[in-house]
Length: 165
Image 1: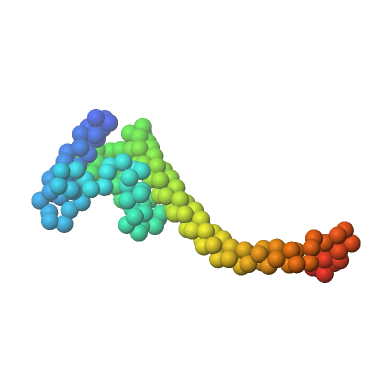
Image 2 (image 1 turned 30 degrees about the horizontal axis):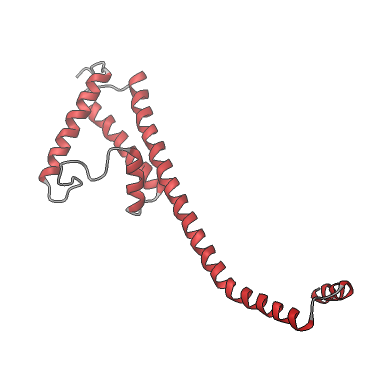
């Protein structure tokens, strides 16, 4: 069998027809990723995909693996239809998938960073809260002590500083 020199339109049409077939199969299946409106529950947007995978507990390697599985599926699809992906066509396929990987990874990482920052801020808030009561007590005790013995003079200040060491 000879291989056909592909065009980007042929490949795009082939991918679109396969996506439509997959969508139809998913609609018929009770275990589906499609919501009631017929749209994928997870958007085709790489940002949404990255965030969705983070919420599902995926790690970064699994997110990238999904895109690489998509790349392999496109290559196998083309091969099964005797379309040889070479030159600018394979570069275009790789550029699109690699771009989607980059976007998904950035969204995934940015969300993780926000969650880490939120946990750090929560930890700091608890720490500040836990320290505020003892510090307030010390401040009150110091104020009461100053009122009882009076404000220290210059020589007294030097003596107090020496005692703190």
